[in-house]
Image (cartoon, rainbow, N blue to C red; front, side, top):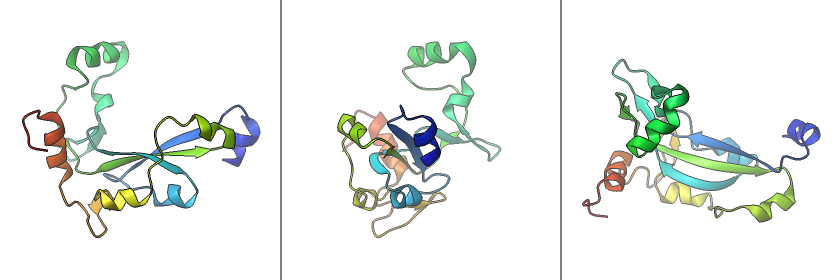
Length: 148
């Protein structure tokens, strides 16, 4: 962060993502002073039939990517099953004045545990870990008739 601040003074913040499906929920980001601004159920990482993991964007490449997602409403046509887990979005402010421009609301770190999103290498942790499986949350978010 010091290097970015020193060499690129016009940069106001750094955004990064913690992926509990593969790594962790961002313990290091929290320790480093990043602000939590998003927690969402994974819909982007897939386990392929051969056991490997890929991101949905790798299944549609090249110039047709934007057209494909516009045509399909954001879905992809590849194989695979979404990994159960959560993704967290963190922001680190290099310029304190930039914090005033933060559009998403800051989320308290405790919200990770409250939502059952605490994870390490795809395994839930915490008192309320995975109270509702992400696969069930994913189903409810895509099925308009599912009970909330």
